[in-house]
Length: 279
Image (cartoon, rainbow, N blue to C red; front, side, top):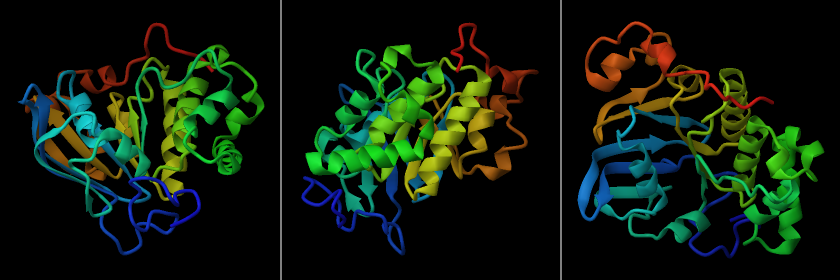
């Protein structure tokens, strides 16, 4: 175990830069069911995320993507199935313990503190770290996202949409999680900036050997960054497997509804919002 994770409550055995070599999948979700008031919203969901790769979760609105994320992070208890992190069954672990064990989560909204500077946001991301480690971790994150380096003293409220999203990812990286969950990171961004954010975030995380669980509405662009894809429809898995076969023929009507896509369906999945954020 490396110094960044030593003594961390709930940390998984062997957690560190050499993780994943000849070991179980980083994240293994098996036949999971979860919901509210003991009523299942998602059922029979299975997915693996490997070190150095990204798994994409897509589906129409109301498909159960948010419920799935909450089941993985521990915000919602499981009604059936299991969640394993590097072979360790964490199905009954609370959200805080899973975070301490190396699960980083970047929500769709409220991912940064607008009134704080970029540097202060990064410090908040590592509030659990010993002070002697915090600066080193922040320096590593800034090296990963050099776009943020000249912005350290700027308030988050004064950042562009793309810069805010990168800051949200960077803040989640300060504790050095092994698994990073990105919940619709391109929401409200223009297509050009969305592509840049996915390139910088997903590519950088995978290059570092981390696993990425990506929930995204921009299907065509997200498929280019993912190794595997899970399609949820009405809380059930409609498709699960390698992303490569889908990259050049995204038929959303078939994937989402089991029929041929209407003309322009693929374009509709990757819209340019009317009030898209600019760099």
